[in-house]
Length: 385
Length: 195
Image 1 (cartoon, rainbow over the protein chains, first blue to last red):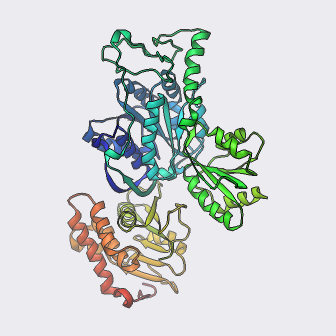
Image 2 (image 1 turned 60 degrees about the vertical axis):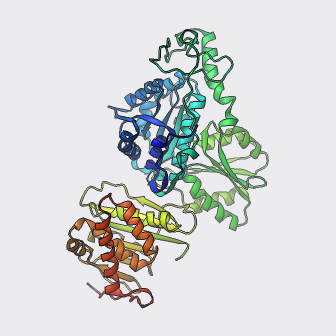
Image 3 (image 1 turned 45 degrees about the vertical axis):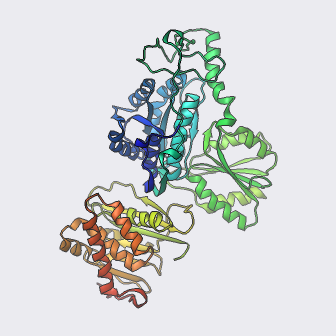
């Protein structure tokens, strides 16, 4: 299906990453946003709240982030595509209801414009310290999807991808921007609506009496209905059966929770998305994401002038992690170098998948700025020795 | 133009520093086929205190978004001048608000001053001071073609104010030509020492 023209601001713009993310959401068909303002994410909802009235969308400034995520989790069941927007401190407060969304298989998008942390940290400055929280922040076992854009253009393009992935896999999708990309203004090309592919909400064609909210019949995800359309409907964060009713048993836990994990794990290769450059035959492969990916490309150019054979793998979908590809590369490269604006998060995934075949060398940055490319270059040159 | 040109614009909150940066970036990226990455400084910049924005303009993709030492420094307040003047590269271009910035000439520095606030007041709205400055900047730096900048102004200002803003822009452009000439005859370092 193509995008609803009402939400698509076709043209060539000069936008910051936050505005571009908001435009991406509207182009993707998002028509309900609940949020609580927090630097550096507020511009996303500023943009949306200004433009939503023109396309029949609703923005609510909630009392806090718990309520914001709860409102999104509920809004989805009306058939509406929903999103919330926050930064680190708010992201922490959303965790419980993100788990609820995962358990109820509620497709939605959670934008986190990452700033320096922990706690209130560096409100106006960049960080990438919430990458593991995005994956593991809520309690219990679940899987979800997370993406990381490297530019305002990608903030637009990948927000649409985020909404589409949410619909296909019925998971909350974490949109892991960083302050640098969010507050950076660049050219953003928004194509005509008939060039934007949208995954619509697919509703069950079953008669009300035949429908069960969590019946899958071998498919990865159950069918949707809109609450209020006459179907008997129940959902809960408790372990539930096909009817959506709580069942406290080992068997039901295995059936339902293992399925919501496996729908992502068993289909991870359809979901992962990365860019690769000169990886085959490289002595060192650099893995990076978000703004760090751009700075890394400078470092790679510098290292190449010093004669090092460097490959680059840029994570676009960060969760699920491209395990198979990293495993493959580990057997042919001398080392991985992983720069990130934290003290070591995604590097742990690289290390896990490399499984001792090649070291994963972290190039940390505590936040508040981006890496000096020379520092990454030095790590690459050292790793190649 | 070298492959990458770095620009800092500074002034006090309310002068339209960020909009000025936005228009330069828009003109370069949308209307002149260049890459332009703008970064705003996000501090406690309420109205009246220091405000700053930076741009990296390049013929190729901007990989590193922040600037080091700018090639061009546009300054509209004394405070901003004090804070950032030594950052400008030695042979960089300084563009300043003549009546607000206590300019001190530096050897080898290309410096161009304009009474942009006064010109804006003469046009009838002091608020377009930043746009006067942009017109002046365009003539002084020639970093982006005049046409692209004029389009950038028209496309970036609030609807209904295009005519006023373009008048302000042209006034700034002409002010440069009157004071410093144009093209090959452009005079350099004419600002008097200790102005």
